[in-house]
Amino acid sequence: MADAPQKVNTPDGREWLVSSERRKRSMKESRETPLFWAHVVVTAIIAGVMIWIFRHNTGVLWILVVAMFVIWAVGFVGATLGVMIRADTQGPPPEHRLWKVSKRSARKQAQQDVAAAIGRGELTAEPPNTRLEEI
Figure 1: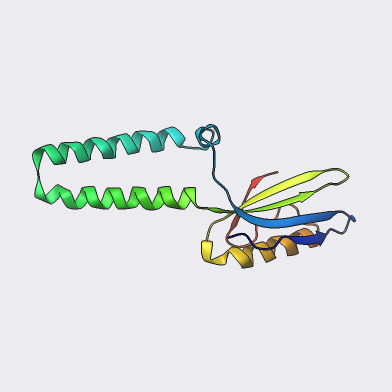
Figure 2: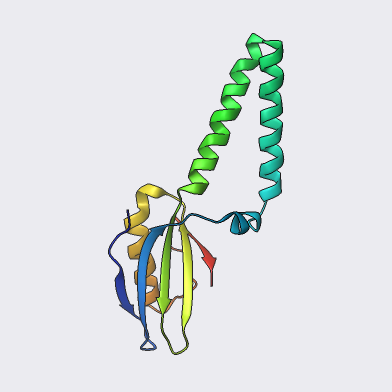
């Protein structure tokens, strides 16, 4: 759920529009993220181990398979459903910033912190629970 966009004025007189959104990455964008191929390899290994365990029916390893799958699923869901804070100005010059919110429960506070930082003219600040992704 997106919060209402905020209009923020910077000390240099430009007006920024700050909003939060859920961002779904395309496959092309996903391939460009760091460690994408490492995630592909780990997923293949997890699938291979699960197939091996299904074929050999080893009781002790079932716990490890379930734990690996849960860890993988949590990481996948977290990466897929992440919230982004977007800030745009028409300029001059036109600019764009994008922050990723690292703690979903702090989404509203993170948007307010980003808007406050932009209002102070700090366009590359990383308020708590955010990480600057795009400039």
